[in-house]
Length: 142
View: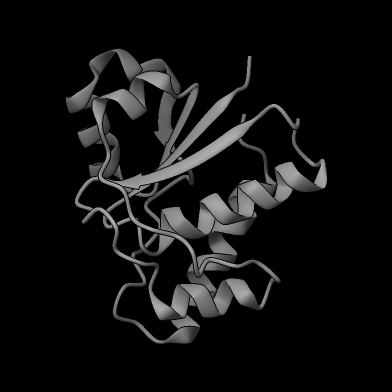
């Protein structure tokens, strides 16, 4: 049975979208077991919104294509199906647990503290966010 990883942020157009693409690349490269699946969602996402231009640009620098990403609103069903749920901020983790209190053993922050939202920032801000996410993913998803 595949292990499902769910990455969560606010709008699902920057942080969790970038993280999803990075984890998917690691799965496809064999760095993680091939039976793992990954998806992302946002606690305030507008279904169907594309990734931001800067998120697309900074992932392209890594050879990853985020152009086809479409935002999805976080649902109780997504949470229930996930084996590991990683939030970008404490408030996202709180919303996950509001939707499904039983997810507590499977949900945590990706980093030791909040990963700042780059939305509205320049490409350098997105690069810093991308690199921070990449460091935590590389450290292991546990």
